[in-house]
Amino acid sequence: MAANPAYLAGLAADTYLPTDQRLFNAFELPLDKVRYVLVGEGPYPREESATGVCFMDGAVKGLWSDEKGGGLSKPVNKATSLRNFMKMLLVADGRLAEDNTGSAALAAIAAEFRADPAAVQTLAQIQQKLTGHGFLLLNASLVFREHVAPAKDAKAWLPFFETVIAALEQHRPKLVLWGKIAEQLNKLPTVRALPQIVAEHPYNLTFIANRDMHALFKPMELLRA
Image 1 (cartoon, rainbow, N blue to C red):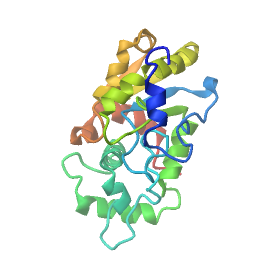
Image 2: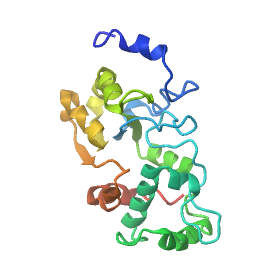
Image 3: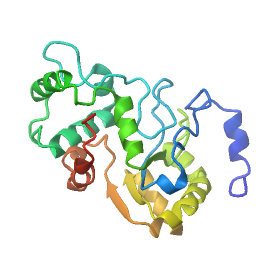
Image 4: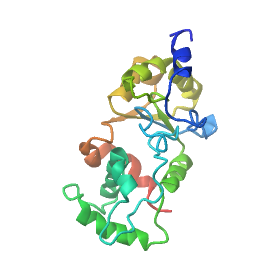
């Protein structure tokens, strides 16, 4: 309110995602358990998908296609960022080649994972594993509005984000910033003071081959239940 007195009143009178009081769903961990803050741009632009948790698409249940010759499930393929994140994990694990991430290569992997009781089957399991590793999955903007540029909403949420980072500062979490909007958070001294890993947003195909992301996520074995 101090930074932009008109913003919250305008938001309250507007239509935005996420719905159903899911705005602060990302705040699941006690502060002293947060080891990473993964920052995306904003909620998915679909009501079912926008969960209040960065990158966790509420429309996605199973990760692997049940169809013969299928790879990733249709809901995963619909969520471009999630699809590229899955491919990045598979490349990091050595199961998928960077230059061959198409449907044929994924079909063989999907069949293997569906038959493996030790393999992760759902997006909810990946979220649980990330939380277990100490991830706060937060977007730069906590809301999405069709008629407002995401960067504009993210700017309005800067004071909120600064407060969150200040509360976490003593625990020295590592920031994982995805995309240009997340990188803009470096305008804040509290953000600049923390260790960071910066990457392109996962909706870019180049994310699949990002070595920094491989190094970060490979040891976590997110695809093992």
